[in-house]
Length: 123
Image (tube, rainbow, N blue to C red):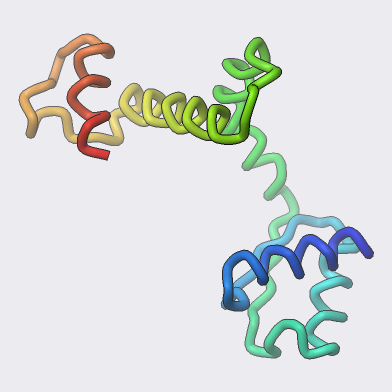
């Protein structure tokens, strides 16, 4: 539970303001840490706490494609390199899933590298 409190304290400090809603998985220590932080005044009483029993599994499944690609890339020299690489992988995943309207820029039925080169400068 100490680790959960430390995590939430760091998250609040980094964001600069307390969250309006916190969604937790079934881990009891997290729920207890949030209750205690509310009681201590570190989190506002108005902060809503939601629970999703399988939240961790949903997140893990969503990032499965990233994990498979970076597994062979362990050993990034800096956090910035890792962040840039992951952003590129996620962008490519969105392009493949069709989350961009590729008809508008005239890229429908275009190979992935051409789409990549067209979309990347707009980010």
